[in-house]
Amino acid sequence: MEWVPASGRGLVYTYTIFHRQYHPAFVPPYNVAVVKLDEGPFFHTNVIEIAPEALWVGMPVEVSFEELAPGSLLPQFRPWAPEVA
Image (cartoon, rainbow, N blue to C red; front, side, top):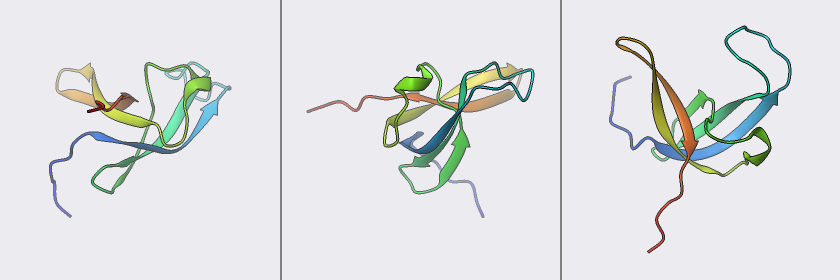
């Protein structure tokens, strides 16, 4: 295994919406998603900046990092609209 650069873009492969609170840090409703990165690997994450009912399989997304503490970043994904030429 090795670290390799990635574009930070991919597609929502699957997801679920939780309507029950299992941890104090996650206020329902919230999603848990699997994103297939453009480079091939799958990434377990959540999709932010979108209502739960608007999320769909195949949605293009891009990575966004939330700083939890100095030097501690949480990768999440948000909807991404590719430019149309």
